[in-house]
Amino acid sequence: MNEQENQALKAEIRALPELDPPPGLWDRVLATSTARQRWMSRRPFALAACLIAAVALSLLVVEQSERDAGTSDDALVMQASVADLIEESQRLEEHLRSLPFQGAYGDTGRVLAYRIADVDSTLNELYLQDMGDSAERARLLRQRAVLLQSLVEVEAQDRAAVFRKVAF
Image (cartoon, rainbow, N blue to C red; front, side, top):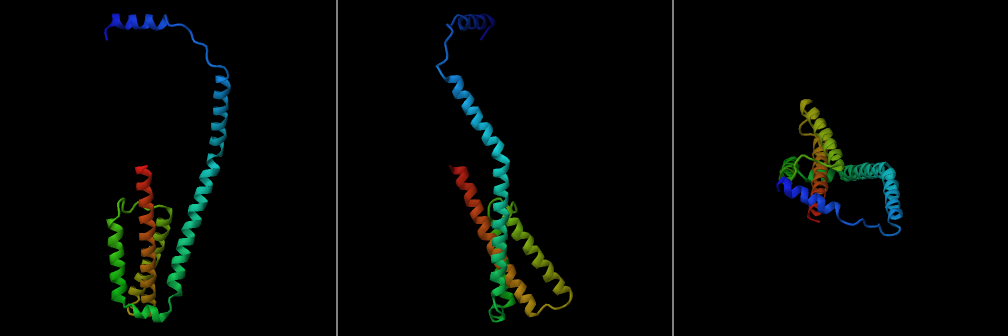
């Protein structure tokens, strides 16, 4: 568009008649603005409530995982050999690596990952104390497998939710 066409367009726009707004328009604009301001003032509370819910859910998942791992009696732990528990842990870790966004855990996933790290630390201490074939090691490996299974389930659900959100 050249300068002459631009000036002609401006002149045509200035020549348009003034229109009166519909009655009550300004009142509706103010009401909408007030409603948005109320929502914006409640946003920190909504965020805090979501955060509390995420932490509570994380704690419930961890508690359930520990309960599942803790309630297994020694006979059950002894049924699964150490080699089987290690193989199961490796299988679950491989499954975690195959998930999209691998390593980008949500709040619950981070809590589970930290708990797994604690179990790994205890396993390393047992190894350094040369107590590699103890019942405690088998119990910790079982607990690790349960925590990894929980992490796989939580992350698979989180990823499915992300994909649903993106799709819709």
